[in-house]
Image 1 (tube, one colour):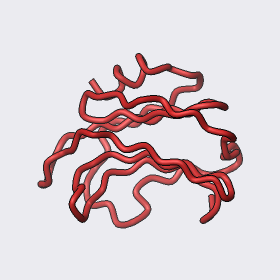
Image 2 (image 1 turned 60 degrees about the horizontal axis):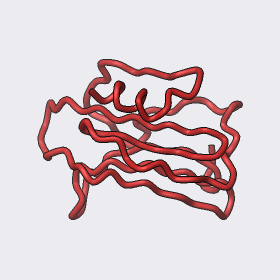
Image 3 (image 1 turned 45 degrees about the vertical axis):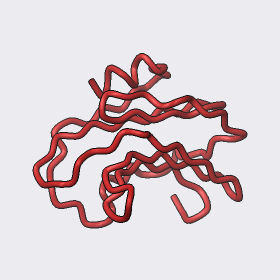
Length: 115
């Protein structure tokens, strides 16, 4: 959306935490981050799965067969009028499957998405 309002899921590609999965939520001055403890090994042509779940009061991420711990959020940024952006910084690969759930899938759904 803009620098002050966004929802972002990413895999770190540099530094000491290469391959770690992050979930970021920013609504104005409030920024919250979730970090999955599992890491994907660096390399090319890798299969990876990342899932993020947001509700009006909480969010959570999952990656590499591990679901994180849900974190409460004070307010969810409204992205209903924004375009979905994938790989906005030079992605050189392919996306084999993209799932978007219309309702809350819970942590069980996150686990299913990354299994």
